[in-house]
Amino acid sequence: MEDYNEDENKIINEKLTHNNIIPINNLSTANKATVKIIQSDGFSSGFFLKTKRNEKPFYCLITNNHVISKKEINAKDEIHLIFDEQKKLKFNLDKEERIIICLDENLKLDVTIVEILPKDNLNDSNDSNFFQPYEELDELNEKLKEKFLGNDIRIVQFPEGGEISLSTGKIIKFFETNSYCFFHDASTKKGSSGSPIMLKGDDKVFGIHRGSNQVNNIGIFIGIIIDII
Image (cartoon, rainbow, N blue to C red):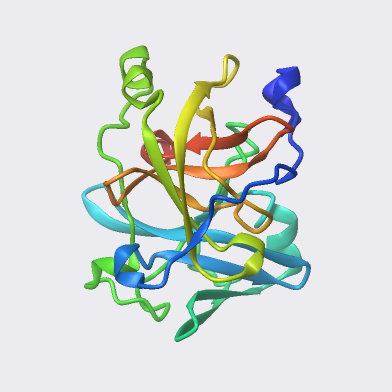
């Protein structure tokens, strides 16, 4: 992701020290669509999202490209997903009917979208298994930036591969060279990459946490991306 072209945006994954992360003791207070992704070389976060494509339901797993990249897809056919200690899922990447989109190739964004099917041990009639996208992200214009800048946000995550947790913060700045990306100050740690970002008090996802530079955390708007694909 060095293509951001701003010196201050040089990515150094989760090197910031953040302590404002609170374990979620009652999962009913957070959407259960956030998952811990376990791979042989480490752990990270991701989330399931339900939207529409051609007026039909579209289900996908979203995380960072540095978590599930083309290289990872070619090298591995299975990852382990943990919703909580009671619900775990083995997820095959090599299914012929699965569509995997890595947005680093065309949009230079650190996002991977894996199309899934409800039969992947997910009940599509239960909305708690899926986030919904934030509906107003049809275009990222200056008016929309004004709406989000300075707004309170929250991130559900699995920091350091531990228990599901929550942190809050604000959007503090938009990238000058990439309108999809923004800085935020919500606390994260290693393993938080790929976590969903929501406005405080809203269960709909508008962004994904990517990582950190030496000053701030970085997020990526996904509403527009979902529309593009």
